[in-house]
Length: 222
Image (cartoon, rainbow, N blue to C red; front, side, top):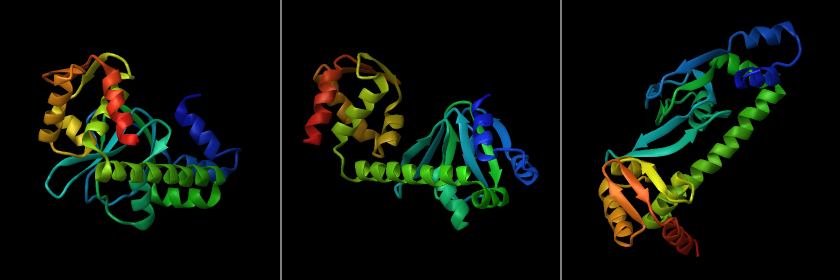
């Protein structure tokens, strides 16, 4: 039984005919990497659950800078999609698949009926919403109050698994991840490089001494 079937079995247990009719309205889709799932300003008409793969949710700052808000991974739903579906507001951000992605698409009318009839689905929706909201608040706090050197150090450590290795990303991609300008990232990478912790190459950063980056992160937490 694959991930999609496991979720559907949990939400629609038993052989109740009306519940199985609801289940039949849930679509399983596969999306290629790089496909826009929703645009800023779109009306939300479906609930989306990622089965495998990853969707990146991002927005633009007032200055036109791309900022990554969060990612939706396997077994997760999008907090903005849920909010827009319930409030009937338009999307304030866009979602793009980072990898080939499998997803369950649930039409709004089916979503509303499932909330009322399936306790398991209701728990899934609201537990996911609570967790994703907490993640989003943490993200806002990091962008608003976190030191850029510590945030960049932590991001590089997370990407390389706290060991020497190579992070494949342009300066602009790192800037989008951290919600800042490309020039800020370039300057900070040069600082790390002068300390001998990294080597900056076109489109990648080689991590030589992750302990140095880890110390920057820990110092900021004190």
